[in-house]
Image 1 (cartoon, one colour):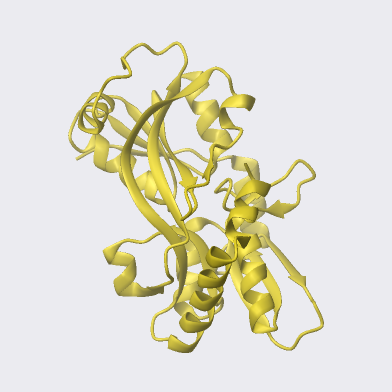
Image 2 (spheres, one colour):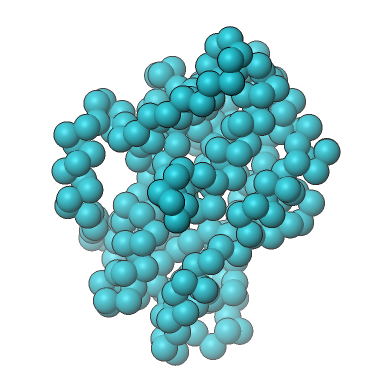
Length: 269
């Protein structure tokens, strides 16, 4: 059985525990546009560029921008709670929140939730140090996985990157290491706690691609430019809520058709 490690930031976790209730909520904000009703969204703040904090420590991202469009079309105010990725699923499943955006469509999730129409194409890649010479840049996805399987591979807790990291090391002698955010994973890579980590890059339906400033800010790391797993990313809502599903899918169709989604992508590229 493979060893599974979890890396946490002790100070942050302690603060979350003291503030959080059952869903791990650490922040709440309501943006009231004087409309009736509220669309409640669960946000992570750790899935750049889907949900993250900008230089002024304001929550932003593609997911929040899309949620604004959904709330506007429904004539509702938008309210978000900030919580861990895994807590987002519970919040939607129990009905405390209407929606969470930024999760890959999988058969298992489709059984538990209504997943909205695809919004984003995600490509998962291996990130490693610039001075790591174990890859030659010509490997297939299978060869990249096989090589990484004998190392320490990081993934973001509660997301597909954790699942991919665990699946990679299951075929070798390596260890999956779970982190709570991207900053911790980069620090873990630099310090030698891990050899690689799994991260996702995004493309709109029209083909507009976002490469985050991950490599600009961290020039000592690099991506192995081979997609080891791809998938469509969208929103999740409670299973059975057909009315909400139709309303939110209508907004998705609109923002794809009228170019709003590409404009949102450009804001975060």
